[in-house]
Length: 248
Image (cartoon, rainbow, N blue to C red; front, side):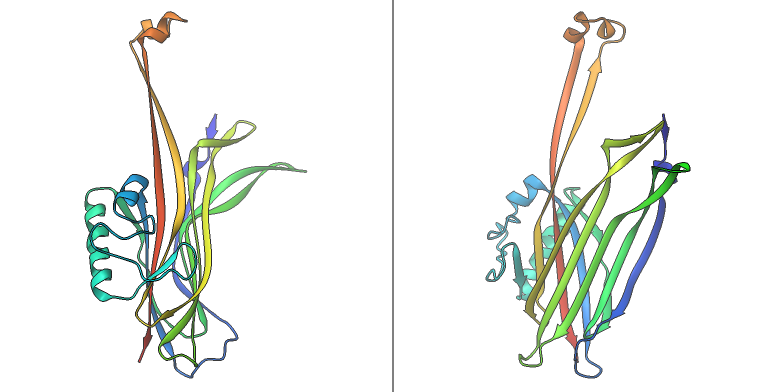
């Protein structure tokens, strides 16, 4: 069976800007910093990432939208960064991306890092190739509220997609991994300098490993007695931390 995964095309696109028709003060700039973190499901629960008070003393501000919080206190943000760094060092958390950019208020910033996976498709000419994007795609639109001092209304959209080798797609003699996608989109108002926290994007995976004694393990029926099957289920939670600050 022929595999196309090695033919995936990787690309990295840093922040790009899209101008939108929002009435904003002239020369108003917003600094955006984002942390896209993937944390082990069990660790996320133990550390209080399941939208409750942190056992390390970190607590989110009042929830305005289900699953969306802000971290307005510098000490709490510092504790959060320290906890995430510790988990990353222990291999229990992975920082997928950490983009930073300064944009003019009313402009949308787009961040893309990933690639294109070729997929076989059938058409009138036979079998062709269609490319599907995978990776991290983040779009952020900050708008300064002229009626509220130091307040930013932000629209954020995050998409994270990964190849899933456990569910391959086969066309003819060609096999490629399917694409698992997690998406979230929200609109919220925060104070300048606060951190917007978005979570709840979970993904489960199951790995099955079989070990058996050579020769004997291949004998029908009897071989089952000399075969060991190990099933490991893993849950991961995706969190997005966006800090926006009006540049003065």
